[in-house]
Image 1: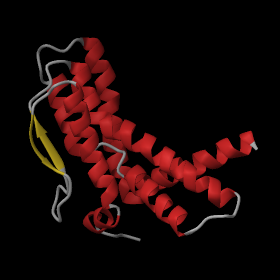
Image 2: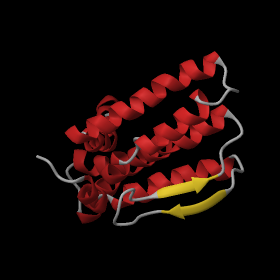
Image 3: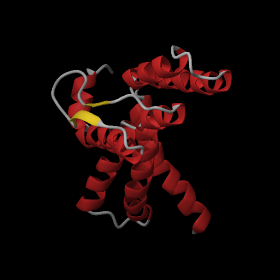
Length: 176
């Protein structure tokens, strides 16, 4: 079933906000000046962070993939608390809301193609990157584009559900 991305972004807006916060968090962590932040809007792109280029390749990589790290962690933490209640059949309305929130956040964990483009340009088109940095960044950019293609097949939402519900169920199964 095809649903336009803007509608999915509206339904899962908490994930968009966390995605942009993650970019901003890594910019702040590396003391990279941020010029403008839009956490959510009803047009494409639905959110963005405009910042100064990072002086180091690893900083550019972490700023670009920061949402994958932050969104995945939050998705798991929030989802785990709700999954416990589902597993023991004592879930209430709050648990269903937390699961929606977790999956929404997880669904926006994948960096955007804009993030991939920024990363590619900073590393591949700069004359200052080593062959090793290029060898590390090329597959990262490839995976970002693969994730963007996969979102057409709901890979992003499936990922959010797997991290929020599937991973906690596996952990609970081994602990109980």
